[in-house]
Length: 184
Image (cartoon, rainbow, N blue to C red; front, side, top):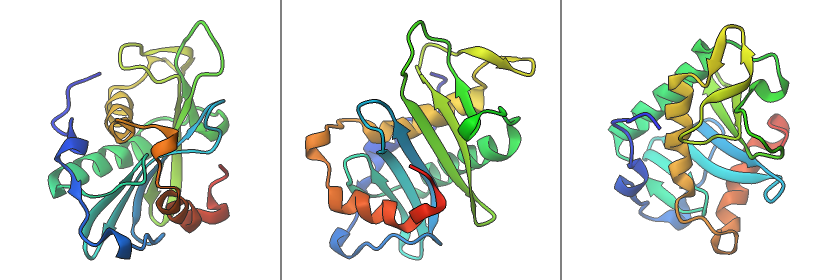
């Protein structure tokens, strides 16, 4: 993965005070990352909320965290640039497919709030050390640097992930705010 000044953001984040009172809202949602795979067909990785009470993340375990402003701003800016600057893939869910010898690779779905709408860019088969695309997007043959960096950063929210340790109540609260807006 490319080096990033925002790397290790997840370890710098701190437990959110009064996590029992946290109420995610669609208006505060900045970035949402979902995962589709054979094991997790409706998986959840991360949500970033910019609320009046600060910058908040909900990670893959459903842990509610306060994120340092610099990390939050930097990662959400990168995600917004991915959604607004990269060419469309013309594929379902705007998916960039990494070249792998096997099929059924996980798809990480980056959804960014841009002008009130969720704009999706997905990466199938993300790997920190592998960037060649299965099929080029125009003349682009490798995953663009900004997409490589952004997906690498948001996947930090899966550090220590285990399905049996997830706070399903928190994750379900986050999923509820998007309702039918995003097909899981």
